[in-house]
Amino acid sequence: MKNKKLLIILIVVVLLAAIGAGIYFFVLKDDKEEDSAEVVPSYYPLENAFVTNVKDSNKLFKTTVILIADSAELTELMTEKQYVIRDEILFILRSLTEEDIASQDIQERLRELIPARLNAALGIENFYSAMFSDFVMQ
Image 1 (cartoon, helix red, strand yellow):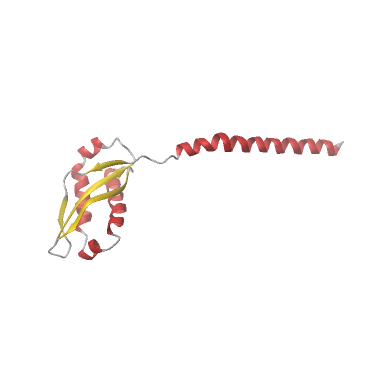
Image 2 (image 1 turned 90 degrees about the vertical axis):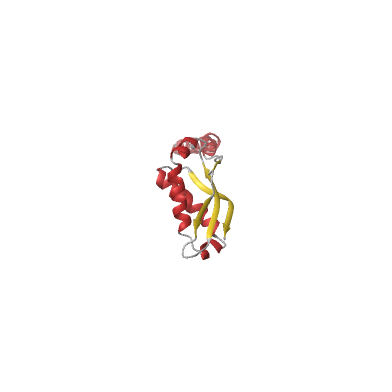
């Protein structure tokens, strides 16, 4: 008699665990996947090219920057804070040496550095990358 009660309790526990696992995998897990869907990027090309002196050199560096963000609602902020954005980017570019600009990974480093500095300066976390349509040193 005692073994039958123990067997029934064990079966009920196993069934409850199976039902709970089923609810998690078929209901809750799908919600998490929808929440973590890939972000659609928004592109913000900066109107004017950046031309600056190369640090410790007589050369000039020119680039055009396109910012990539996770929000399509930054147009107003970009207009209002354009002077901050341009200043931060110029500060970064003026610190580059000829060796920096000639290095193979400079664009990748700037893709990380520019958004990080802009997010900090603007008090946001929306920018996550940058692209370059010109990248010339003369």
